[in-house]
Image (cartoon, rainbow over all chains, first blue to last red; front, side, top):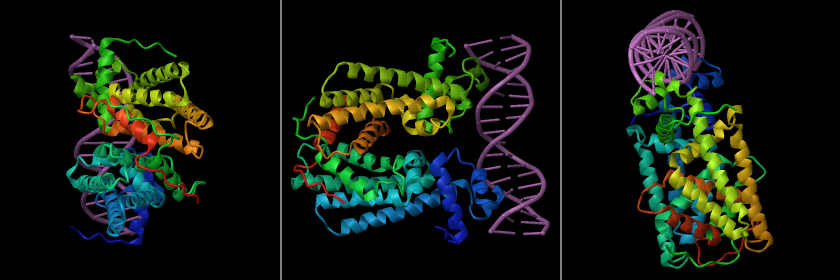
Amino acid sequence: MTAIPATDRRAELLAIAARLFAERGLRATTVRDIADAAGILSGSLYHHFDSKESMVDEILTEFLDALFGRYQEIVAQGLGPRDTLEAVVIASFEAIDQRHDAVAIYQSEARRLAQHARFAYITERWTEFRELLQTILREGVADATFRADLDVSLAYRFLRDTVWVGVGWYRPGGTMGVDVVAQQYLSIVLDGISTRRRPVKRT
Amino acid sequence: MTAIPATDRRAELLAIAARLFAERGLRATTVRDIADAAGILSGSLYHHFDSKESMVDEILTEFLDALFGRYQEIVAQGLGPRDTLEAVVIASFEAIDQRHDAVAIYQSEARRLAQHARFAYITERWTEFRELLQTILREGVADATFRADLDVSLAYRFLRDTVWVGVGWYRPGGTMGVDVVAQQYLSIVLDGISTRRRPVKRT
DNA sequence: GTCTATAAAGTGATAGAC
DNA sequence: GTCTATCACTTTATAGAC
């Protein structure tokens, strides 16, 4: 583990890179694009970073550390399954609001990045998030907060995907606040969209 | 509009390209990768296709035409809001099952492709799908199938995203059949995961 | 911290032989 | 329908001057 100098210029360049990575995709963003956007030449970027891959690594590491730190805070509060789930969902939407670029990169590139040894921590975080959500769901089924017929592993994937996919359309600073979106989201996930329950079809 | 010769070899090469595009991403898949996988040299691909972009275009056009033809069939049946929604969701999951590569390409690249004039039809299809789902939701609210407090435009985005994001983890031929997944999905969306309804929080 | 200059490899695409 | 050969251009990254 090498210490990384956290200069202002470095952070500034990283923010520029993150925005381009999020908008155009990792592969479609060249080091020239980043340098152009920063008003310098491409070679000058290598004074700050080893490689383009290092920039991505740093953006994701910082983001994931902050996010999972927040999740740990929530778990430590020892709320019940429903309140814990709500808090985790709200924290995730807040991340979409406040770290939009990093979430967008994570959402659209993490799966492929995770295949490389350098990004193995993505898989670890993925596992951590799965255990977090599945534990909440299992406890909720056990204490009758959630439906007894819930397929926990499927519901987990559903929750995971639906939370993060919001980054695709949510625009920070738009008319709809992130807290409103989170509440509407929770309303659908917890209570469904229909007025009356139907029998669960078995196949 | 130029007629495209639909030879066997052409379809075969297109299937190989679609698999690679889906697995690695458009930008990360080179014409050499496609040619290698097909057992020919990269130059030979240009006997069949104008460009790499043409391959993508053809894969997506064919997929979207088939999918929206299916949606039209469903609408033409004149079912109620709930049955129409169920049928649309099931048809979408069937597409994930049967046209996995095309759906994966669509899911992860459509937004950026739509910015180019050549792929303007993606935006048109997007609008078509939005109107389809929002009409179902509005009619469902009107006849009390769906909750009166539903935010239709937000629920639409929720449905749209959650249906297609399934392509990220669903593997055709796996242990869980696509019909089971679709039913579980509908169960959550329609009825929610909780045992009892909570008051909707207003902000 | 940035620039000049450039290397080394990869990329989409073409022309014409077989 | 595929191969040989190759072009024009782009891309990541480096070395050393300023």
